[in-house]
Each structure stands twice: as structure tokens, then as C-alpha cells.
Image (cartoon, rainbow, N blue to C red; front, side, top):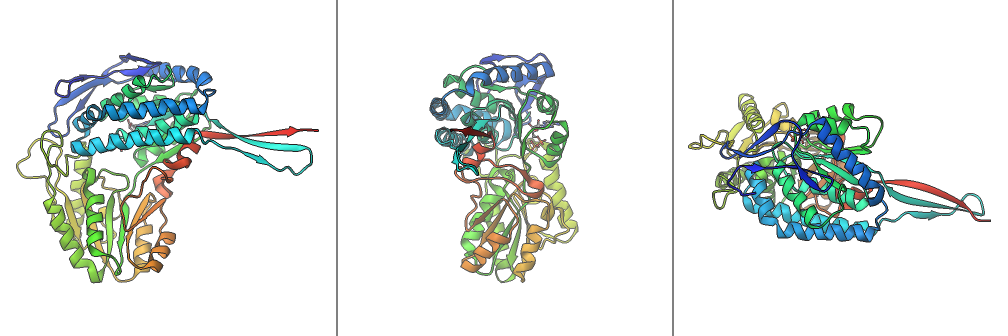
Length: 481
Ligand code: ADP
């Protein structure tokens, strides 16, 4: 599909591209507001066709040798790499991130497929000594079955891949429902599965919005639901799931950064800039609030504001050297404005940003914003903004800063800058988050488990644990004399 024409997207069901039986969903470029694609608003019947195909395919896919499954995953990774420009163009067109970052996302997805290809060949159970002579217990790992994956728009390519690659590696089949904001990025990912000649029905794609997602989650033939998105939708999904089945959820962040008096200030500022404003702040593990020791505070906020002011805001598709694209939808724009206004009225200093960029009437643009002198009662300090906004607050007592960091429902990731080894280990232990990144801002890497606590969800993606979520155990007890 051409990048400048209006794309006509289809569902991928049982190895074939097909239109849905219902209405058509329009997809817009957040930089201009123009319609860039039309895709199916998939109906209950479309969903049923996809689930039925996945169910049928599971009967054979589950028995396919793991090394053969690995071959398909490596081939998909290679096809993705070859299609990087096309997948990246679709991503930027729909959600606005600068093209080089969209390309980076595709590269990371290819790496994810390679990683899970290798993991597929290392599924290991156990042989156990028994409590009685003459018996051996074997613990086997088997695929769970048919997976429903519901994904958001902020990393529309990677977040599908984490679920898709891990589930296929485990021997599950899958139906993916991507975000209504980014369906053609998902379609491009699925083209790579087609190039890799994945057997029909093993991976299926249905586009649509919440109604389609609800139909998928509610389908009785689904064995596991894997969801990434908002807390409100996560709560709705728990109620919609039919019967009793495993559900994994990654529900976002409001992640804190603690900069202790022993921090390397340069590194802390660089890390904060990157993890607050990359992807226009639309990252589950974005730094949304910072607690900075009073000795470094004024220097930190000054440098952070300077760095934020230097970021280039623009159309990630048509302009060069853009650091921060538009936010993907009006809801994020409105929430960013609301959080900034709330902080301003409660006494925060707006050091930089705090408005839409002057001279850009069209598109969902918002300037990178640094709010200083924030207090915990401000929305930015306890609710996820998911936009290019960071609130900063000074502390003198490190214990109090840790308590504030832990005080919100968020439990996905926390960040620490400190050169003091004792502090590093103490904070690593005491921060109640699924990931703690120290002196770096890469809380999520492909080889280590990544998941939330408290209001940020449950279950893990990435690492071996990401695949374990699609496996179930079986105890086979053999009497041998
Ligand atoms: P975000 O705004 O971060 O994308 P949402 O929770 O609104 O978060 O959406 C995440 C995904 O969940 C999207 O694919 C969306 O279409 C889907 N979705 C929304 N409502 C429901 C629902 N009730 N049941 C299942 N999926 C849903």
C-alpha cells in the first residue's frame, strides 16, 4: 500500500486477506488529521472466523517440532528486517513517531522474533525423584492453546511482537486485535508472517476498536488473553473474559525517577530527557515524575528544561531531525494540557513548554514540558500522563522520596541515578516496581522479564518468562516396576 494514498487494510484470517463483514474504520495521521487508511471494524462473526481458524490450526501447530517453529520465527524476523521501511512508514503515518524511531522499533521486533525462535528450542521440563520407589515424575511444558492478543498504539509493532513471537514459540496459535489507531502497522507485521509461510490459521489478525476487542476476549474458544493498554480497559477485560482462563496485563506506568545526592548529574539529565520525551512521552515506562535531591535540584531542573527546549517538535514523516512527533490522539493532548494546568494552578513552575507549539494549528502537537516544584497532590505526580510532560520535586530525605515513589498505584518501572553502591542496592530492593533501572533508562530489555505490579498489571513479557506465560505444565507419573 502506498504511503501517501489512503490504504485499504484487510483482516488476515486462516492465511488469507479478507474484508470484514461490518463497518469501515478510518485511521488518521496525527500530524495532519487526514484520513490515511480504512480497515475493517470487525464484527463478532469476523472474530469468530479468526478464532475458529486459530483453534483448527492449533491441533497441528501444537505438535510441530520446536526447531521447526523456530525456523518460521527466524524467517519472520528476516522478512521484517527486509520490510523495515514499509513497516516503519505505516507506523509513523498512523501514530506520529519520527521515522528513525519507527525503524528502530521494527529492528527490535525482528530481534524479538530471533530471541523467541531460540527460546522455542529450549523449552525444558523436569524429571523428579519420587516419594516412593519405582515411580518417576516427568514435568512437561505444553502450549496453552489459542491466544487472544489485544494491543495498543504507542509501540504498535513491538507490542504485537512480544505476544506473537512468544506465543508462537510456545506452540500456541493466536488472534491479534491491534489498536484502532494503528491497524496498518499490524497489517505490515502480518505480511512478514505470510512471507515466512507460517501455516494458515496459526496467526490471525482482526482490526477494529473496543467492540471487536470485547468480542475476541469474550469468545469461549480462547484459552488465554494477553493485553497491553489502559487500566480501565484492563479492568473491563477481566469482566468480559468468558469462563476461567489465564489473563496477562500490562497497564502502564506513571514511573518515578529518583536522583540521589550521589548521582552523576550529566547522566541523570540525559536519562531523564530521553525517558520523558522519547515517543512524545507515550511509553508505559516513561519517566513521568522525578524526585531530585535538594543539593542537585536547581541544576537538574535548569539543565532538563534547556534540553527539553532544544528538542525538535515536528511531523515525524515529512520533516527531518524530529525528536518529538505529535501525540497520537486527542485524548493524550487533552490529558497533557489538563495535567499541566492542574500543576500550574497548584503552584508548579512551568520551566519550558506547557502549550501546543505556536504556528502549528493542525495535528496533535504538544511541547515537551518540564514542571518544577511539584507536589504529590498534582495529577502529574500520581497519574500517568502518557504525554511529553515531566513533574519534578525536591527532597532532602531519601526514605521519604522512596515512600513517594511507591505511593501511587503504579508498579511498572522505576529509575535511580546514584553512584553510591549502598544506595543503589537499597533502592533496588525497596522500590516496589517490576523493573528498576539504575544509572540507565532501559528498563525493558528482551532477555529479562518485564511486567507490572500493583495497578500496572500482572504476568511477564520478554525473556524466557515471556514464553512461559504461554505454556502450561503437565505432570506425568510413570510406574516402572
Ligand atoms: P490505549 O489508549 O493505551 O490504547 P486502551 O485500553 O484504550 O489503551 O486500548 C488498548 C486496546 O484495547 C486497543 O486495541 C483497544 O481497541 C482495545 N479495547 C478497548 N476497549 C476494549 C474492551 N472493552 N475489550 C477488549 N479490548 C478493548
